[in-house]
Amino acid sequence: MARRGMGNSPFPTKLEDFGYEFRDGSLKDIKTGGPFEFNISKDPEYNQARYEALGEAITAEVYRLLETEVGLQRLQVPERADPDKPTSCVFASPGYADAARLLLLVHGSGVVRAGQWTRRLIINNGLQEGTQLPYIKRALAAGYGVLVLNTNDNHRVQNKQKQLIPGSGRPEEHALTVWDTYVRPAAARDLAIVAHSYGGVVTVHLVTKRWEEARQRVAAVALTDSVHSMAAASQDIRQWFSKVGVNWVSSSAPLDTALRSADGDAARRSAGHQQHEWTSWSCLEAVMPFLEERMQQRGVEKKD
Image (cartoon, rainbow, N blue to C red; front, side):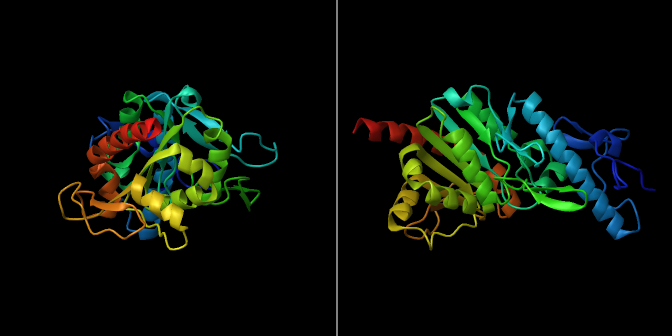
């Protein structure tokens, strides 16, 4: 039943070789037009392994769409790499370094990579629901430069040995490297961050480690069901976060309903959906106006 791909994997590496394609934004069987089928074998382990291999092909396809559909470019991480060391990448809009406003997108933990919020939604629902493409399109239309982080791309296996990617061995390290390499020299004085789930942890760590820069440049932090904690943050950071941040959390309440919030943390609002993985998609229509509101407020603060 298994088809040989590259290396020792019994599965192909390209989406079309699995017999699937994205049609009108949804994953469809090329021959039948039907949705993805998980249980094609009586062997549960085989089905799971196939699903995970398909996920790797999805990552490659999303990378391609970042380049072809929204015109982003790959930037190497680390920028200057030892030829014997593995590298990662992030994606940036053309001219991002000269844009007046810059948006950073940070996904959560696990198997997702740059451009993805949740792999399951990409496979079972579609690109709109599961990828960052809707955010990127809206941001580009609003005049933002865009930088898409890749915080889970941390290692390569070479000669059966796991090698950490320099500057990207952990999600938090990746974010710091991207900030130091690509954000710091960028012209934008007004930055916004949208981060999902563990991406909130990465964001708090980034702001803490680059506090003096962040407080001067980051105008808005939009979190989607973040799992961060402010317990170890300084009072200054906590006060700042409560001013610039909103965390849209899973809830049965209507979208953007104000919820009970902790002092010294981002305000909590309903994401308009009860399931964690849906929150980034479900709160898009609240996040983008919030970013614009914060950018306008930032302009007023600068005049004052």
